Image 1 (cartoon, rainbow, N blue to C red):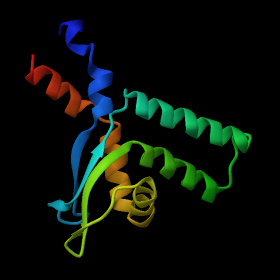
Image 2: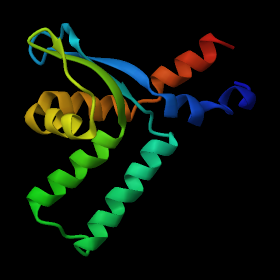
Image 3: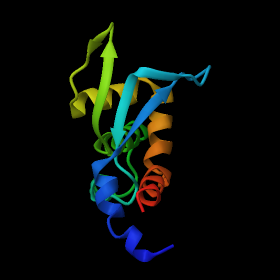
Image 4: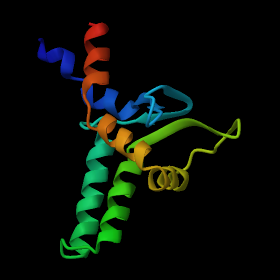
Length: 131
């Protein structure tokens, strides 16, 4: 592994990678819910973690459970930088508020986005497939 191949990893992760949500029971891809999520080494994810830390400090590190949940959802929503989502066959506008709503209302989506946002696989695969 040549270190030069890793130089633009942060930039690649800031551009994000598309992720298709899977049905929570069948595991089948749900093409009506495709999110673009930044990687864990991206500046976007780093800033989201810093914001989370700042918000936790506002509660002296001990927020009530509902506030902790909100803070964690906000951090994760900041890592979603785009989407192709449909409701009743019509596109849903991408916005931070709509991402928060999706992650709040659909626990299985939140879990999948959390796991994908922590993975470096999409970026390393892209880096080495282009090398």
